[in-house]
Structure formats: C-alpha cells, structure tokens
Length: 284
Image (tube, rainbow, N blue to C red; front, side, top):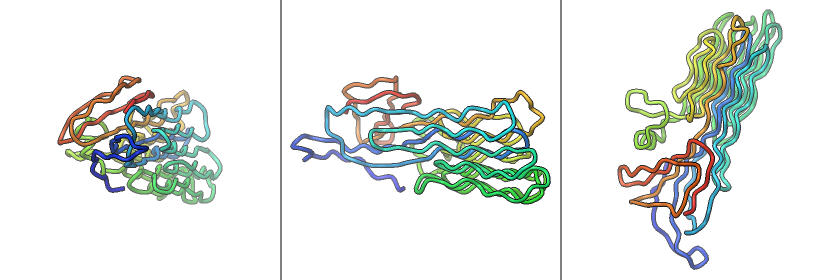
C-alpha cells in the first residue's frame, strides 16, 4: 500500500492519459448497544492507475452505520466507490446483555461481545488488504472487543467491564491528510480508519475511532468506527460510524474538466488533490 508517484502518460487507445492515485475509505460500522463492542473501521483502499482524458468517473462516499437506539448489534457502514475501486463498509460492533455474539465482518471487523456469564466470542473478520479483524470478547461478560482499524486489529476484551481498545488506523497517507486537512491529526501525523472502542470506556483507535461507553460516533469523513453503548443510555443513538472519504491526487498543477458533488481542490507539495466528502463525479 505504498503510494506511487503520479506521472503523465500516453498510449491509452491512442489518447493522452493521466495517472491518478486514489484513496478510497468506506463508512465505519456503528458500535453495539447494551454492554457492547466497538464498530469496525471502513475499509481503506489505495490504487494508482492511468485514466483517459474526457473520461467521467463516479464517486460514492459511504455513510457510517447508523447508531443504535435499542439493545443489540450495531450497523455495518456503507461502501465507498471510485470507478471500479470499492472500499467495504466497516463491520458492526456486537451487543448483548446475556449471550455471546460475534462481531460483524466488513472492511475492518467489528468487536465481539460476551454478555453476563456467557462464553467467549470472536471479533468480525476484515476484507483482505483493506483493514483488520475486530477484537474478541472473553468469557465472563461485559468485555466487548474493539473494532478493527486499517493499521491494526481491535483489542480483545480482558475482563468483566474491561473492553478492548479500537484498532489504530493507517498513517501511511499522512501527507495526504496534511495537504487536505482530513483524517485525525495526532502530533502532526494524520490517521484514517480507526476502530471504535469496546465496553467499558475503551479508547478508539487513531483515525476517527470513537471511545466506548460514551455514546460517541466515529469522526465524519475518516471511516472511523463508532464506540460501544454501555446500556445505561437507553435512548442513546449517537454511536454511529464515521462517514467515508475519497481523495484523488496527481502530480503538478491540474484542473479537472468538470466535477459534481463540490469536491475541494488543493495544490500542495507538488501534487493536486481532489477531496470528496460526499458523492459526485469527476471528468478527467
């Protein structure tokens, strides 16, 4: 997943073309409700390819999974898409008062939950090349795992009332974050797609993952997973996943022929960036 330099190129059906690097991040999963687990981060997908001039590509920015208002599992995040490139939405965090429940699969997997007196449960699986698995829940109850992040798996629950931390997101694209003012800035390093924290009050992963048991949502346009809900917040619904993001960049100073969806254009450090925080299109 090492970024490649954009270059001008020729030879696509006899037409000039341009190399675009693309960073596509899906919406994060929401945390579970009632002694629950953290949501998995949205999948993070990088690509570099040559595109023909006058070609129009559609961009879809996935929403985070909706927050929960009643006991049970969270909701999976929605996919983000650039052309034929798809990042998979984050898996839901499990939620249960009295049983063992596996985390949901996704770009990164959601954490598992073990209710009162229940056995161990496994975190949700991740999509290869896009994220990491959610954390497991241990026998004993109320120790939901953290959601997986783009940089690391979610932490396992460790004891009753001791949930797992959210997996850290990816800092491989920190330069993109600095140029576009996106991602989570931690001491001038920018992270994307962190997992949500499990029960109780476990920290979310850098990259927009929310802390557990505080009814907190993943940060918008990071793909961060939502935090767990501790069960006392009966009407709590703010623990949704963070929405996704699509960033395109190429070398030099470049202006697209046309765009929809109001992307932000920035020229920085020898690159031109187009940042989509909502769905739209770009004509190369």
